[in-house]
Amino acid sequence: MMTAKPTALSFHLKAECNVTRARAAIMKLPHYDVKTPVFMPVGTQGTMKGLLPDQLESLDCEIILGNTYHLGNRPGTDVLTKAGGLHNFMGWNRALLTDSGGFQMVSLLKLAEITEEGVKFRSPYDDSEIMLTPEKSIEIQNCIGADIIMQLDDVVQTTFQDYDRIKEATERTSRWLDRCLSAHKRPTEQSIFPIVQGLLNKELREKSARDHMTKDVNGFAIGGLSGGEAKDDFWPMVSLGTGILDKNRPRYLMGVGLPIDLVICVALGVDMFDCVFPTRTARFGCALVAKGQLNLKQKQYETDISPIDENCPCSTCKTYTRAYLHSIVTVETVACHLLSVHNIAYQMRLMRTMRKNIENQTFPQFVQKFVADYFPEGNYPDWVINSLNSVGINLVKKYIVTFIYIFHTYFPYTY
Image (cartoon, rainbow, N blue to C red; front, side, top):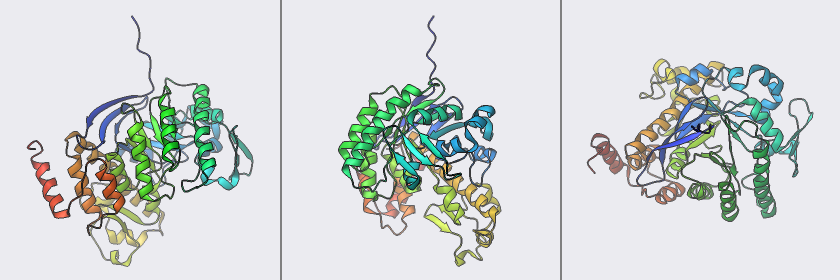
């Protein structure tokens, strides 16, 4: 009797929107079964700023992200190996994804030198020299032990204009993928995702996606976006990627976390997202709500005794008022914690709501209402209108949206 070949990831589609490209699925990973679409909070060095692992679990977070470059520097592979991997080291029992360190080519560009061999960094910690090759990136990620690991890619700032450099980076990323796959020592425990590159060049991005489709991998990432480009340039590249990449494997859009971006990119067919946005904006005193953000530093909240969001079940909203938070934001450390709890809860609830509406075939109606709430004056940006129109959602006025959403909520099977 033949035994089934062990796999580090299986992806089971549960529902597909009958209008857009949105879909709901279960992604089975060694440490946890993750429901998609999913937002992954970022814990760069094995910790979430302002939150503990058990708090993340209570917020229904199923997978978080760590940074290979920073973890490889501190605490380092010797400590992580001794601890038995990052899961044990940080006390996290659910799924993990690690990036490759490639993004540091942009964020630490003044400290980096890029060649075919890899990336030579000067450490921001002690000024020592570090050579990060595709093989070394995978070696570190094998040591970290995340469920999903990323290939090392040649990353160029999204708004860069030099075609030759963009072409070089895109083609090098494909060559580095082969080296990453060859160096991978734990293929039955960890899945490498290739990263589609090409910046804003349609032909290069399409070639990158098709090259990666030929590889024996369990999922794909769309990289090189959300780096300062115009939204009118951003969404067509996302749509191009999801239109090419295999629908039976997860698609991960890197570095995207604004709520409006999440909703639109789910409509375009993306399954996974990560971003520092919810915790970073918390550190600046901002809370996420249906209309965007509340800047709790503003004087108008000084005497406001209502919660951030009356409909939010998080511990911050159940316990504290806007006035209290106004008095401590950007002053007391606990304010960052309280707003991070709320902002992560908001993102998790948004993803759950999208999954539910995809499963109930009410996703287009949900999108209409979400956009109407997000832009209460009805001044929808062109990129929002055009991106949604490309997948069959034609935005209508708010009062019509509200009626349609209520009707389909209470009478979901009458159309």
